[in-house]
Length: 208
Image: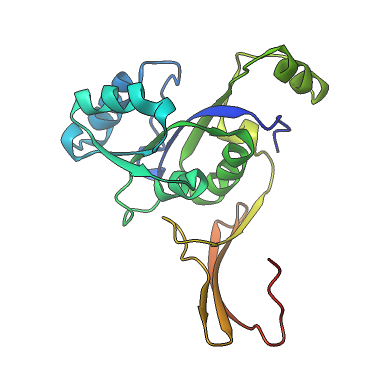
């Protein structure tokens, strides 16, 4: 996995149906949306772009809206939002925006198992961030990382929902039973397993 400092990462991700499409992630986002539309044959007004609902994305949202594409704003959970681009039933075609770099690496691991692509560029606010990155082995501060560069080799991905998200339901507690919903994936076999588990909280204590 890419060993990156806990700073923001600019991300572009799209699902398996666009997998053969090669894009330059440094292109303006409106051009990327148009290219996805042309490649897939999906009209721009039918493309759905998922973006974290943050003030820093105000200009990005305005730019996407000018293309005519639809926008799905989410409160949190950009890992599951990236994964949603691979699910034909999610209604999400493209993920754009900035979020944590560790979450970008985790999302890359999931896409290695599911198909699709993610590109990420680390965003440095100051020299201290660059110094930390250098210590962690990063020398090119302008590099755009591909899926394989963020998560190489054979990887596995596992996640359990805490709150309801695009990918998984959150924890449900009824009487003394807590129900959790998890997913486990493997890149080598492209196997995806969903696990629903019941936990007796009289026996298995919940750590708060």
